Each structure stands twice: as structure tokens, then as C-alpha cells.
Image 1 (tube, rainbow, N blue to C red):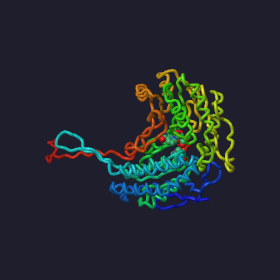
Image 2 (cartoon, rainbow, N blue to C red; image 1 turned 45 degrees about the vertical axis):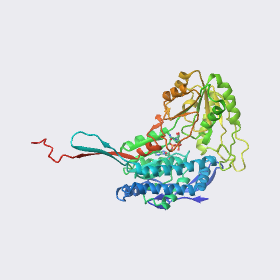
Image 3 (cartoon, rainbow, N blue to C red; image 1 turned 30 degrees about the horizontal axis):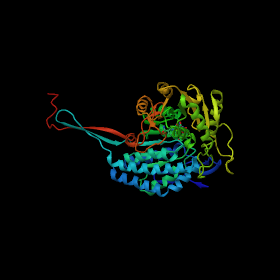
Image 4 (spheres, rainbow, N blue to C red; image 1 turned 120 degrees about the horizontal axis):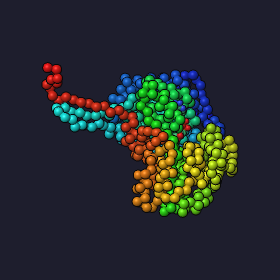
Length: 490
Ligand code: NAD
């Protein structure tokens, strides 16, 4: 079993208390790693290191070219270590290896993308009256606390760390408690690639102590958070005392809408992919599948037949298409929703114990794909985020009916629609209240394109140029070009 240390001020260190906790392999329930159980004093050390790097260490004054070069070196380090990172991601999170490999490749590209953008951060010249000149500068927001969830441990972290470095911020990254391993590993790359001490610090531990300590710390200027709505609300409350800049990427209950004219085969696979990829532990999961009545029964039957063949197993096995859920807590939560669903709707698939798992996986947190149908959009399984492989199928009559049901949710992260009629597609794009709308696909997330929610799915955007804006402040500069006195007080 390997052990990992925190990365603070350019050095690898145990928690100040010397305490550790076990990070598990969810496919077997066995201990994968020992990692530091950090606490408020560790957060304080990391924030002080970040402040030094930012306030007196010269990091914000580093040339944009240099920050870009460091990001390119980190990208190369990620590619050189891709196999190890992907394997660790799968062992710690549970996801199939091919998915982890995709995440690592995206992470490497994300460093490259922001490495390129580092030299393109600039303000603008403004037209102002009189003998004067005005312009804006884009400056780093300062010290940022980056708090991430466990479903995409590498990607969720990198899409914050990379723009923070590009912008000239210093940061403290807190991975989710169950899945700290890959970002603690990546800290070795930060050290090797010449990132100055304190510019990125990585600490493992529980959100209730170290996450909260980061949010309350007066030395932190900004919190960039991805996670649940409940914790997002808590962060807004706790961050209010020091008026933290906050951006929140929260959950969803996204509709995946199938019009009767959609390509049938693509639709069936797209509905399953939309909700069962990554074991359903996806913020943008298409967990509400809306099907137009003429194809409702046929599509439901075809989805059930195809979903029966999804192969469950440890993510590390190349044949696996669905791994275990991340831990016991998530497993219990998903099973409890399946019990709730049994009372609210009809169950076409799932809800039974998993069979045929390889030896050693008896204690893994596996749940078979579940498909509920004839679900009322008011049911709990249609309103609450389950974050597991549970699909709620809802019929609709016409376009208006589809938009009404799709938008009848407190969330607004994503929506997808499937149709071959471009008039209908354009109408739907305009009517759906969500930060991301996919057409004839669901889930691709591009580093180049903005990601974030409407409504209670949060605010702020990650990725693309928008993700960089979140780590900058705008400074206005006004210059008088008239050498005479103002002439107001005669
Ligand atoms: P969570 O909210 O429980 O935890 C997220 C992070 O916050 C973790 O690092 C956790 O330790 C920390 N945390 C917990 N309590 C805290 C506190 N009081 N103060 C500060 N930090 C605290 O979420 P999770 O269970 O790890 O992840 C699942 C959730 O994340 C789902 O709701 C999902 O939709 C959401 N998510 C959203 C996106 C997106 O891009 N919108 C992406 C992935 C996941």
C-alpha cells in the first residue's frame, strides 16, 4: 500500500497532527492508500504559503510566457505519467479505465489550453471624453481555494488549477475526501515542472474541517467550488463574512429529450450513455429521459434490452463498462432512492443484487443500472439528484409538453435533445433553461467550451476563456492627458 503526503509551500509533508486516513478502492472495499488527515492548522500553513507566493514571492509578476511554459511542462508531465495517473484514478474512484484514460488526456490538454491562454490575458482601451485615456487591466484575483468533488477527481481539479496558474493566482486545492490520490500524485509534477513554492498547494482531508477552514480563512480571496447544492449554500453563508468571491458548479437533474423523429438506434444508446456513464455519478447526468409518446414503449423496451448487457466489474478490467459507486455512503443513498422509486413509478430494470462479479469484488459498491418508467415529473426520483445509475423515463406529447417538463426543475445545468428536424432543434435550444444544451449527443465536455449552470445548478463558468475570467479581476485605469490644473477650486 502506498502513502501520500500533502504538498505545501513546495514541500511534501504529513498533516501537522501526524494523522492519516485510508483512501479505499471501491471495487474491493480494500484500503488503497494512506493519506494525510489534514486540519485547520494545515490549511493555515498552505494559505500563508500561497499568500507569500502571491504577495511577496513575485508570482503574479512572472511573465505570462513563463506561466505558459510551466503549464506546457505540467501537460507533458501528465502525458508522461498518464498510465499511472489513470490507473490510480480508476483504483480510487472506481470508474472504468478507458474513462480514466480519457480524463487524464483531457487534463493534459487543459494544461496546454490554459498554457496557450496565459499570454492572451489582456484588458482593453476605452473611449472616454476629454483629454484623457482609459483602459482596463486583467489581474489575478489573488489566493484561491479550489474545492472539488469525487466523481472526476483529476478533471474537476485541473479545470480550476490550470486557469488559476495561467492567471497568476496562488491556490490551495482540496480534493474530495474519498478520492485524494491522483491530485496528491500530480503535486509531484507541479514540483518537478518548476512551479514556484506556494503557487499550488494540495491537502487531503474532510470538507467539514479543511474545506470550511479554507472558506472562512481571511487570507483566501476566492473560492471555486464544485460539489453539491447543500455545501454550495454553506460556502455562500460561510464566505459572506469575508466577502469571498465565489463560483459554484453544482448538481442537476438534467432532461434528455427524445422526439419521435430522432434516429432510433442513436437515441437508445444516447439515453443510456447520458445517465449510465461514470456509474451515473455525473453532475450533468441525463437522469430524466423524456420520450415522445409514438416511440415511448418501443424505446423503453430497447433501452432495457441494451442496458441488461452493460458489463459491471472493477474499472481496472478492460471489459468493464460500469464500475462501482465511490463508497458505502453513495451506495446506500442510491439504493434508498431505488426503494423510493419502487413506490413512485414502475421499475423496468435493476434493483436486484449484482451477480457474476469477479472474485475479490464481494465488498465492492456495485449497483446495477436501474430504469424506472411512467415517472411523474413531481416524483422524488425525477426531482432529486441521485448521482448513481438510475434513469427516470417520462412520456411527453408535443414540443410544449417537453419544454414544460424539462424546465420544471430547480436545476439548470444541462439538457439534451434528439431530433432530425433543425427547426425543432433551434426552437428547443432557445426554450431549454440550462447552461449546456447538447443536440443529438449527451455528455461531451470540451475544454474549449464554457461549463456551468443556470438556476440552482450554480453560477460562474469553468473551461474555455470563461474559466480564466473567474480567476481575474478587472482594474480600471484613467489617465489625465491635460497638464493644466483641474480648475474646479478657483
Ligand atoms: P460535496 O458537496 O459533498 O463535496 C464537494 C467538496 O466539498 C468535497 O471536497 C468536500 O470535502 C467539500 N466540502 C464538504 N463540506 C464542506 C464545507 N462545509 N465547506 C467546504 N467544503 C466542503 O459533493 P460530492 O458528494 O463530492 O460530489 C457530488 C456533487 O458534486 C453532486 O451534487 C454533483 O452534481 C456535483 N458536481 C457538480 C459538477 C459541475 O460541474 N456542476 C461536477 C461534478 C460534480
